[in-house]
Structure formats: structure tokens, C-alpha cells
Length: 98
Image (cartoon, one colour):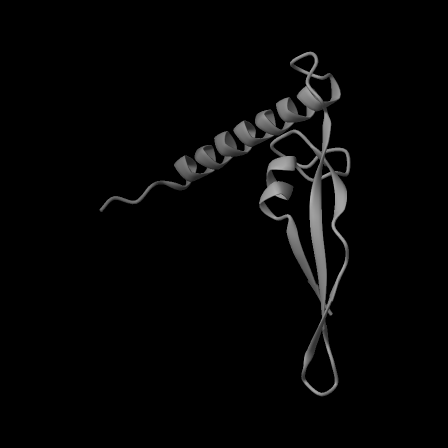
């Protein structure tokens, strides 16, 4: 088994970082400049949020909020302070632990 030289690892890291930077920048530009034209920038997803509160007697009390529409952005990454819609649709049930 041969070992890769440090130079090769450094080059692979730089190429990977550059590709990720280009993809993120392209994703951001597509949101800001509406590429392709006519595409909606933002959407909304119904989110069910619940709270799990630990009590002093070692029990857990669950509190539920009514479903609320949460704003999301149609992109691969979170932009402009909103999570991506594809992620929010997969995580529509959120539990907060206290």
C-alpha cells in the first residue's frame, strides 16, 4: 500500500474547497439574481414544533404548538437567513429539549 505525499493531500484539499466555494457562490447568485428567471426565491413549509421539558421528578413533559408555516429558500444551502426548503420538508417535525 502506497502512501500519498503531503503535497497531493494539500492539492486535493484545495481543489475540494474551491469546488465547494464555486457551488456555494453559484447557489447564492441564483437566489439573489433569480436564475432561472421566474423561479420563486422563497417558499414555506408547515412545521410541527414540540417541546420536551425535563421535570424535577425525572419525568418529561411534552408541549405542542400548532403547525406554523416557516419561510424557506429554494436552494441547496441556507441563504438570506432562511433554511433550504428541501431540508425543512424532511425535518418538518422539530423537537426542542429543555
